[in-house]
Image (cartoon, rainbow, N blue to C red):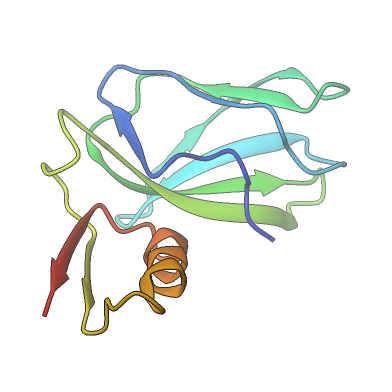
Length: 118
């Protein structure tokens, strides 16, 4: 399951606020590829709202976790000065009138921030 309100990109210094956490979420983690974990502040478990502050530039996996440590939902995001600073590359080889929507849906699912079209 994915975290539906995680954006593809956040500016450095911008708080990540998630308001649509799965039922049973007791913690929110941002995990870097290096293994470093940044724990979020759960502001209201009843409301399902969490905040992550001060994330450094990088690409993260956001994980909503239950009290037993089970991952309930996850999604990737990138933090940086601008979207091109840490590109998540994608490409498309078909971009005719009938393929535009499926290709865009696929690129969004991959969290692409930069796309090359061939």
